Length: 142
Image 1: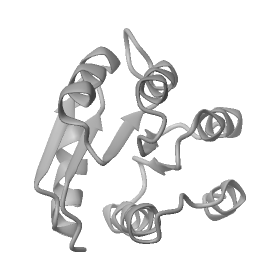
Image 2 (image 1 turned 90 degrees about the vertical axis):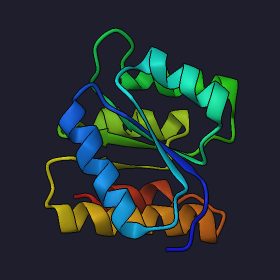
Image 3 (image 1 turned 60 degrees about the vertical axis):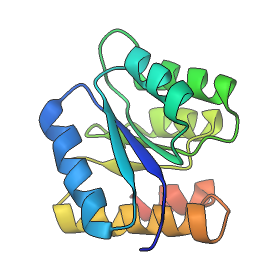
Image 4 (image 1 turned 135 degrees about the vertical axis):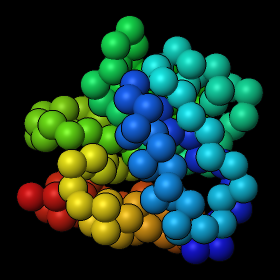
């Protein structure tokens, strides 16, 4: 993956941020991997750094992922956001997609599965310049 740019990982759990960061580094090509522990911090970092990709946890204290997604999209309607979750709630996934997320990743999947999904999202988002279709995302995650 020869993708230059910045990625912002937003999760309230340090070990998840480190884990996802390692997976992204294994794909190669990103010049900077930023981390935020909550939605407020994520917005500040996004406004300052303008990363090409945001990986955003759904369940966080203070400002949850849905509100953070709304705020990111309000600030920059073209930002690329992929939701991170360990709880699958079809309604929440649909709301995230309606709010503009291009997909979601299950944090509780095996590392190889997460890496493959992340690689596909990056390829679809950056190389073809089109987000994956909502129906395709829901079908592939069942």
